[in-house]
Structures are given as structure tokens and as C-alpha cells.
Image (cartoon, rainbow, N blue to C red; front, side, top):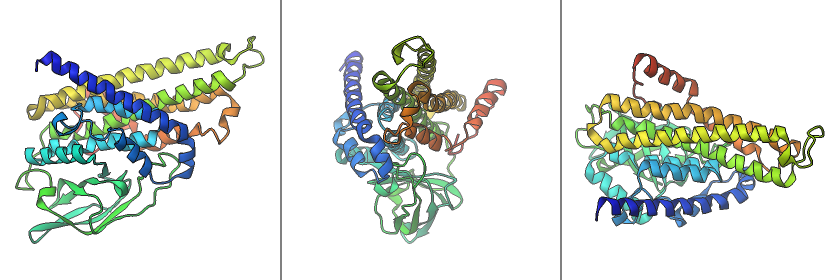
Length: 401
């Protein structure tokens, strides 16, 4: 197959995946406010993603996936966010977590997990938040290992077919790919926040949970490794997921507000017009929001291209190339945070007081964004961008940067 033919085939598969995502987003949007109020674990929503073949889009075509790259998968996350921020959160995390084996695992581990992901349409939950409770500690036990500890903010973990887990082993960071429901794993069911209510982001505990050597990513020895710039792209992976479900939420919220305004809004009494859609104040506000959201979306696209270029470079990636990719993502993180939060609030200025009726649930957009944008302070992303721009000092790797 020629390069041109291969690219055309990939583009067709990408377009088909986006179409499926749009249909799912439309279905999610119809019941989003009701499901937000009910605050139940998102089992049915994950099944909807599975039924529409959205979980395995990054896996090779020969295994049953679509062969999409991470930047393309992030666009799917954005489309889902237009209908439901919580479910986009879960999907974006899932896409990032299924790539971890390709960064840290052996080729055999990465290939085996890709095959399972595609054939079984696995959903991945995450137990990785480095500030969420006590450290998870891995210790040796005979020919295997045991995992103990507690973590908060374990999005999707209670429902995951597989879990992507970070833990400490002899004082060093290790990544573990663990089947869900392993004995000793206990979801705490304590997630009841104002936003992202359907992300199943409660705490979890591990009590002497068995871990096999094959489930710890990477070759022997487990300790004494130095992370390469390529491997440290794990953090921009997560941050790009945030970028896309932030701006996707803003896009969907604006679309909902415009539809509601066309149907129900009234012009202000001194506007001099008969329809809300001709009110000059509303037109100005819509124009400002549309321009800001479009600009942030374009920066998000650029961030995806930059990260994908770094991923395509592979293990030969240099520290400077890693920094350039990370900064592109962090620029987008800063702007999408600011723009999406402002848009979710200002939309009520278009719609008017009647739109605050609880049955509509328009406030969920701001609650969802406000909850997740506190994940890591965006001021520090601005600081990292500034330090790179002014001093060429690259962000030092952590699970936040």
C-alpha cells in the first residue's frame, strides 16, 4: 500500500470515528442534565462508548482498532465533551492510559495489551493521582508482588476492565497494568462533588493486592532506570486530554445556549428589536465567545500536532524536543482553562434568567469545568510557559508537568 493510500484510509477511519463520536455526544446531551442530578456510576455510558467502537480507536487495524494516533483520539474526546464533560473525562483518560504501555513497557507488553484492548474493547480506569491520598507501595512477595495503600480521585477505577496504576517500589516510580476487580482492590464510593459527577472519581484502596511481574511495565531490573525524554511525554498526554474536554465543553455549551436562545430568549426592552437573535448585546456577546472559543480550539489543535510529532519521533526524542511539545500543550491548557470557564459563565448573559431553571441544567457546564480545572493550578502552567519563553528552562518532569 502506498503512503498516499494509507493516509487516505486512515483519514476515512478517522472521519468515521468522529461521526460515531458525534452520534454518541448527541445521545449523551439529551439526558445530560438528568444523569448529572442522578449522580450514578456511568456504567451505561461506558457501554455506549464500547458499543460504538470508541474505546479501541488507537489500536492497530489488524487487531480490530482504527489505527488512529493520539492527537486524533484527542479530537474524539473533544467531540464527546460537547455532549457530556464527565464521559469525555473518562474517555480522554482512557486514551492516555492505553498509551502508557507504549511509553514504559517492553514491546511485548505493549503489543499484548493493544491486542487485548482491541479484541475485548477494554475500558481503562486510572489510579495515578500523585497527590490523592497515601502513596501506593509495591513490595516483593515470593515470585510476585503485593500492592498496598490508598488513592483519591481514581477516575473510572471501580468500573475499569483494566487499571493503570502508579506506585512506589523501593522508592522509585513504577507503572502497573492491572486487571480490574483483583482481590484486595476496594473502591470507596465517596465521589459526590459539585461537578464531573459521572466520572466515578472516588478513592480506592489496595490491601495486599497481588501483582505479577508481567503486570509491571518495563524490562528488568525494575529499579535503577532513568526515564527518557520520550517516556516523560506521559504527562503531556494527560494534559492534552484536559485541553480537549475543556474546549469541547465550551463548544457544546455555546451550541446549547444558542439553540435555547433561538427558541426561548426575549430581547431586552430597550434594545429596539423584536427578537432576541437581533439584540445587539446578545450578538456582541455571542461574537466574543465564538471568537475566543475558536481561538482556543485552534491552539488545542496545535498542541495535539506538537505532541504527536514528539511521539512520532520515538525514543530518540531529545530533552529540548520534549520541552517544546510540553510547552505547546501547556499554552493550550492555560488558554482553554480561561476561555472555557468564562464561556460557561457568560452563556447565561445570552440566555437570560429563565435559563437558570434547574430543570435545564445549564449550570453543569461551569460546575464540571470548575471542578476539573482545579486538578492542577493553571497558574503554574503559565509560569512554566513563561520560564521556557524567557529563560529556556524546561519544565522538570513530574506527573503534573
